[in-house]
Image 1 (cartoon, rainbow, N blue to C red):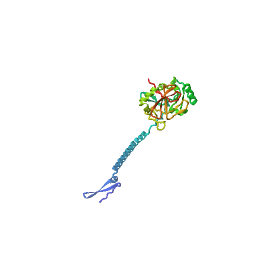
Image 2 (cartoon, one colour):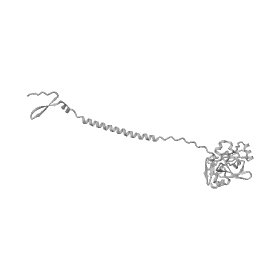
Image 3 (spheres, rainbow, N blue to C red):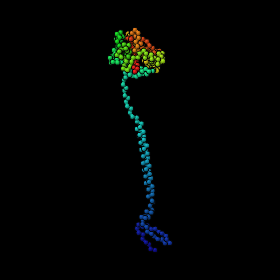
Length: 284
C-alpha cells in the first residue's frame, strides 16, 4: 500500500466509502474555523442589551430631570414677594379725624382743638388763673388745656370760654358750625330722648370705673371736665360739657353735659367758664 504524504497545513479526514479508506486533504484554517464556537450572535445580543441599558439610563435620567424641574419651580413659587413698607399716615386736625352721622345730622367725632378763628386770627391762650379770670371779666375769648397740660389736648381737645364760641370771626372751621340748643335737642330725640341718649353718646373708656357708655351713636363723648370762672379745673373723668351757640339769661349760655348717669343734660352756665366744643356740619 502506497503512503501519500500529507502536505503541511492540511489535516487528514478519513472517509469510509465502499469499504475503502480515502484521505481528503482540507485546509487547516477551515477545520480550525469549524472548531471555534460561534460568538457573533452573543456579541449582538450583548450589544443590544447595552443599547437597551443605555436607553433605560437615558429614560431614567430624563424622568429624574423632569421630576426635579417642577420641584424647583414649586420652590420658587413658595417665595413670597417682599411687601412694600407701609406709608405713614398724615396727622389730621381733630375736627378732620372723622365725622359721624346721627339721624340727619353730621357731627365731628372729636372735640374742637384749634387755636385760630376761621379768618386766621389767633385765639389767646390763658394758662394761668389770673389770665383766665381777666379774659372772662373783660369778655375776651380764651382757651386752655385741662390743667394746662398739653397732653390732654389730643385726647379731650381744648376748653373755650363762651366769648370764643360767640366771636364773629368764627370759632368753627369752614363748613362747620357751633350747634345750637335746638341741634342738641334734635340729637337727643333721635337717640330716644335725653334719658336714653346719654349712654349711647358716652365713650366706652376714660370714664370713672363703672360709668362708661356704649357709644352706640358714635358720638364718642369723653369726660373732659371744665374750668370754672376763677380758673380752677373740675371733674375730669366724670363729666363732659359742651357749649351751644344759644345765649342764656343774665350773662349765661346754654350748654349740654354727660355725667355719670346715662342721660344727656342741659343747663345754663356763666360765659366765663371753659368747656369743650363739638362742631356740627352746616346744612346746605
